[in-house]
Image (cartoon, rainbow, N blue to C red; front, side, top):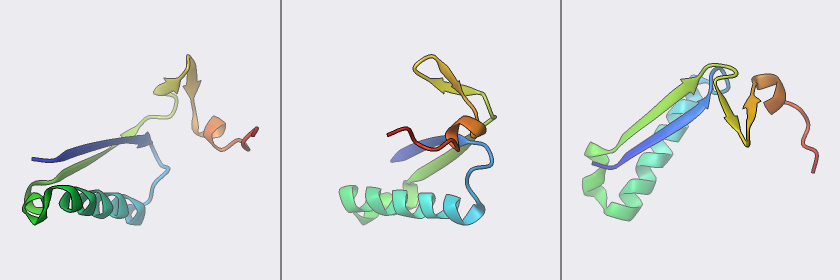
Length: 71
């Protein structure tokens, strides 16, 4: 059974965006494994509480994620 697990900051995706992730991920697995994968593909979207994760030793919050890029 193909399985995809997305962890996203809580409150950053609406229902339509979650549905898009599920359908497009399923389509990708079908493209790779064939139509037989459609019925068994599981996509899990987990919403992580604000401040409940980090990258490079920095705790991430919605406020930090929404800051303008410094590129």
